[in-house]
Length: 252
Image (cartoon, rainbow, N blue to C red):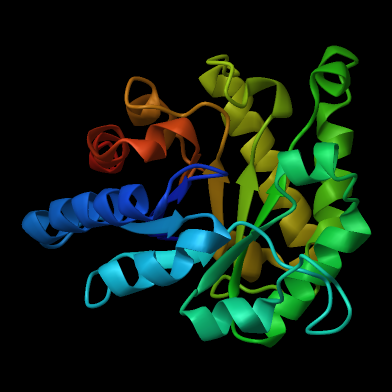
């Protein structure tokens, strides 16, 4: 099945307003100059920059997403933000279950599942993140961890239109280390197989699977050429226009 490549830029907790506008405009200029592309691009800035980035990218081919949302639509949750608020701000996507949320905020599969459900219910597409820690990798538990995260984090209502799954081995994020291409493809095959078990073969074959562990301009071409890798979840390299764009240009 043909799946259109998706390149996601996760800016994490970086950028003031002037920086965000300049970065968004730089990517928008690149995609405008390129015309038709073989890939989609999504930018996920911090909450403080969403409105500015949405305004900057208005009329462009770029989508805007958020980096997280709450499990509830509203209520007494000081400091949190709901999926419906993100939708109202102009987001079309939200990342849930990022490894930094799982590890530093102790989020579990059930919470990620709740976030994905509420996001889809208000019309947001989700990028659901999964991946093993270094300890889990060293104990050869990667496949079991990935299967459990798919089972526990992906809603039964997930479709190829509203759901993207990103595999991000925790030990590779921001370290410059990556699994071998064979290892990446093997895990993506496992993910798609587990999605097929949960959602059916047709749905699983349509869902885009992203790789998210230190993908950069140097290794993107090889990673994006793998049969079950349908894009990338990019961290540090998305903070530089040329680096982020170069990854897009690597898409088959």
